[in-house]
Structures are given as C-alpha cells and as structure tokens.
Image (cartoon, rainbow, N blue to C red; front, side, top):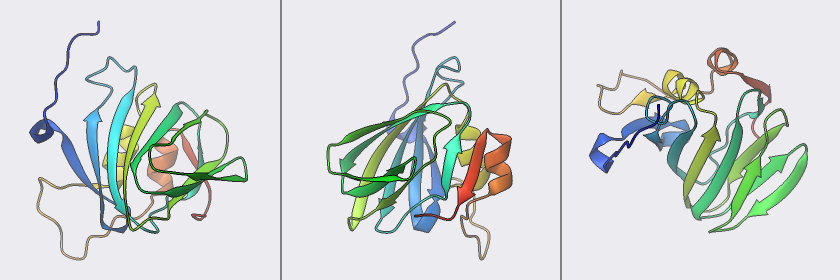
Length: 153
C-alpha cells in the first residue's frame, strides 16, 4: 500500500558516481511501493554511461541545468537546459554531458534500477577506500535488468 514518504535533503542517499559525479537517490522502490525510482545527478562534462538498454523500466530525464547529447536507437538528439526526454524500455540508449556541469533529474518506472546504482556507486556516508573509482559494472547492470551494448557514446 502506498503512503506518504517525505525525504528531506539530509535523508537522501548520496552516491559517488561516474567521473566524480554525485547521484542522489531521492525516492526508491521502498518509498514508492515499487512504482518508481527518482534520482538526481550532479555531473561534469563528458559523464556518460555505457550504451545500454533497460529490460524492465522506462526512463525519463529532465535536464535542470546544462546540455547533453542523447542517443535513442542509434539516433542522436541534443537536450537543452530544461528539456525532458522519455526513453522506453528495450530500446538502446545513452547520453553524454556536453556542458561544463549538469543537473539531471531521472525517473524510472517501475523501481528496481536503484539496486544497480547502489551496487556500482559508493555511498558517500561511508569511508572512501583508497584508490576507489566508480566504473560501469556490466555484471551489476545485468543483475538489475540492464544490458550493456557498448562503450559510452
């Protein structure tokens, strides 16, 4: 049964992400009865996940600040500040940040992909192991229904 879930900034899990970025888990499946996951990326120019597809969830991005290139089924699009893109499941996709910094809101439905983000990233509330670096993990991606199709675009 769904119920109110209020997460103030101090309550949101902060993950170290690709290229020294941060992913804040704003809402996860536990908070939304499995309906959706919401995250917010603070990333820099060049941040890009591997080209991939989601088997279980649809994805929505809103570029709050910055610019990016988005690939969807091998077609390239420019996403400007304030732009929104809907990426249905089972279609190859990727993006690359083209501005100096970007603030990107992401929503996935249903929830579940947050497990991959947590398995790949590092919870910033925990000590950082010496030499730790966030790298895409195809095994973690596969465990959570994502297929890595190639390197970042």
